[in-house]
Length: 165
Image (cartoon, rainbow, N blue to C red; front, side, top):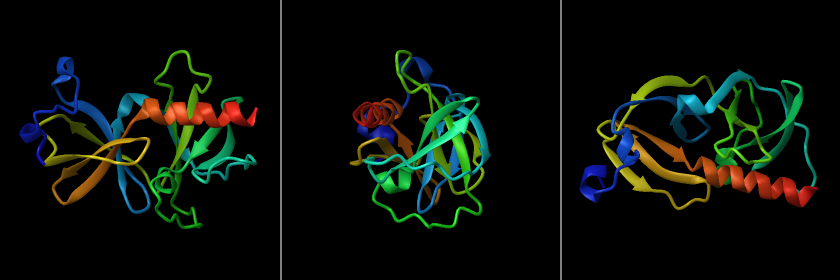
């Protein structure tokens, strides 16, 4: 279904222009998110496990003098993730909720993201995604990318951390 056919815009009405975005390779899927939500992309480092967390919550890493949670979007979507993180990176994401106890979190990527300009007219099609934490899937040419629901992801992280406390 094309976004223009559905009558739905994937961008807010006030932002019908192109948005600088990152095309992020994951294992078995891609991710598309606004460039401004990413604080840093660095080398992968294994997170320290936190007992009692869901499988997609990989643990915590030390970043800029603080402990931040690290997640696997592939695991959240039910995909199998290889255990060899040779080309993996750690993408640090800024909070989208100003009152959140989770100011930053990490997402493991399968490589370096690329910059693209993305807008309503960029996607060949847009489909709703049934998985918690992801908003929709867009198709650009032969490639598919999931657009995350960053507010939902952050709420899921907050709930996990609150339950562990």
